[in-house]
Amino acid sequence: MKKLTVIIESAPNNYGAYIQGVDGVVAVGYSIPEMKEKIKEAIEVYKESCIEDGFEIPESLQGEYELEYHIDVKSFLEVYSQYFTKAGLERLTGVNQKQLWHYASGRTKPRKKQRERIETAIHNLGKDLLAFSF
Image (cartoon, rainbow, N blue to C red; front, side, top):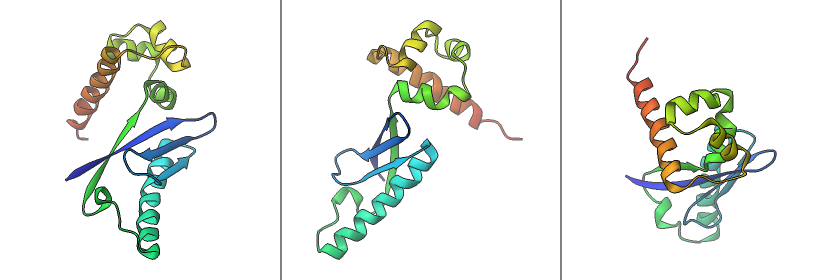
């Protein structure tokens, strides 16, 4: 199954998203879950518009596909700050709290190695949590 990359960007009052490599499919939402629903709706509207206007649906939107979401570190820290403290993230990722504050404020952007370190730690936490049942 092919994967479509959805790029999520934060704005002062909402989140925007677009599909990498597919012009014309965009969405805005006040939260990440809302934005995820809106991008799915935008895909369907886009496909319907192509059919109605006699245009071919882009190959990437034909058949089955999976959406993969990409978010920058600043936006991730902003969105999930209600769940993760900087101290907890430091223990989880090994990245200094002060540095995490810089990333969260947008003052600095993490280097590739730091982004990968944060991403790996979050993914590992997700895997650990998925292993539990209640």
